Length: 302
Image (cartoon, rainbow, N blue to C red; front, side):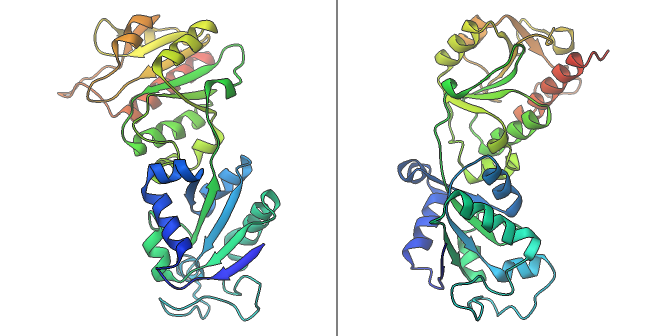
């Protein structure tokens, strides 16, 4: 494990980290994405993703743990007295040692960079991330990678634009025990930091495939998975539709809905009752409603 301290915003590693946070093309070109927070990073490492570099700020950890322990003022180094070791005020904070050990087991050449609070605030995508940010190697997510059982429950999303919505759907999919999430013709990449944050790490635990709508339709038809499209026109109530067998719940954007290809390929069109003045729910809320209806039916609920 290589440990160093960086205190300048002009440092190459800091600039590269910031670019990965902000630019989808940079993430794609480098084959890296950014994970913030001990919880999210723990899920990431548990799923076997390979970390490249950890950026750690003892000041932020101390503040968030209400244990300053003589941490230097903002803008100063948090380096401990022992060269080659993590700072004393960092070690042992909320299982950080175990997290670093797990990361090093996955990558013996892991880099660890200690940064002061003013740099951490510059590169962090959000607050309250327990003072740790990681650069992690991305992997391809294709339909060929999915391993589905006899009666899978699959969530399909077409052209969802907002990463926060996609992340929230992944979180619901994990909670409902869905077998996979298929992201068709995405308008955001699945390694977007906001998506990772809103999924609370579910993007690492739920099998995800990224593909075109045409490929997804062919994939589902070939495996005899019933396609249920969420739409207002020519639809039946979602709770009157059988979801006990192999089922794909398909949702589109809030503004335009699903493309005609999905409507034409559907085995049934389903809708959620809207009893107020609005005609739709947020896509992540709708996804949760439909997923848990499938759970209810599969558990023999009435």
